[in-house]
Image (cartoon, rainbow, N blue to C red; front, side):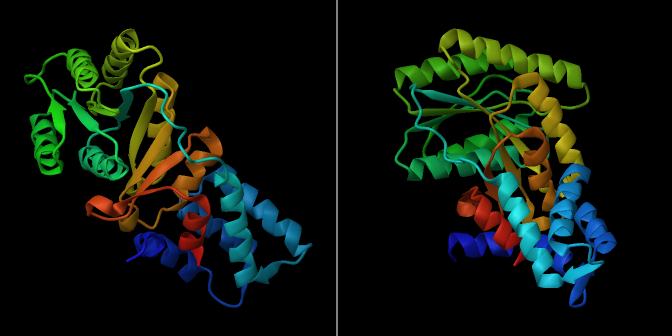
Amino acid sequence: MGLFDKLKAGLAKARDHIRAQLLGPEVDFDTLERVLLGADFGVPMTQAILEAVRSQAKEKPTLARENVLAIVQEEIERVLDGDHQRPAPTARPEVVLIVGVNGTGKTTSIAKLVHHFKNQGRSVMVGAADTFRAAATNQLQIWCDRLKVEMVSGPAEADPASVAHEAISRAKRNNADLLLIDTAGRLHNKANLMRELEKMKRVVQKQIAGAPHEIWLVIDATTGSNAFHQASEFHQSLGLTGLIITKLDGTSRGGMVVAIQHQLKIPVLFLGVGEQLDDLQPFEPKAFAEALLK
């Protein structure tokens, strides 16, 4: 199965949800608004799409169904359009912090990122700085053993910043291209979590100028509009540079990808559309919009 076919299959629930509710040869604006909000496009993005449809409807109360879908696709592409190609790294190792709440698929996503970057010919290491969840470290170690990459970890409940420090030191010694650092995702005390992540960021900055070079948030697409609030909180505290959207194959709420990009301007870098290692795909706006609607 090709990349686009996987994306199309992964977005089947979201696509079927949208198309199934836009019944008949014509669509009225109230129905379109309800469908877009139900797919978690959010109020601002929904209003932008409705304005685009109205401008082409020219005062008509309805518009042909396929014309509406084409306009929606154009608006999605317009919002998502931009340079989603990551610039060539200027530092070695390039340090990427992977953040996100528990349950989003963060650990599995890191394994898929390792697989992706190894296939690009890069030497990759992993830092297991989620020291408060032993299962996360054990799971990550299994993946790293399978993918034949070195992982740096610490004892249970060790200072996550100290694990990050050691991981960078070892990545330097090994002359690694890329270091992916897993972080804790506890949300029972948001203030403590954010302070912990901010401390880790400061420690990393002291070791390598300009690091962390990237901070990527892993978001579970099935949480819908709640994903927007997570992205907003993490972005405010850390300054996110990219998003990884997981579990798109299990939700009808594909609009949240567009809503986050529309309001927060954080680029979507990867989409998770399945369980296999190669089911984390680099994000392509045009392909996403087409797979979501056609």
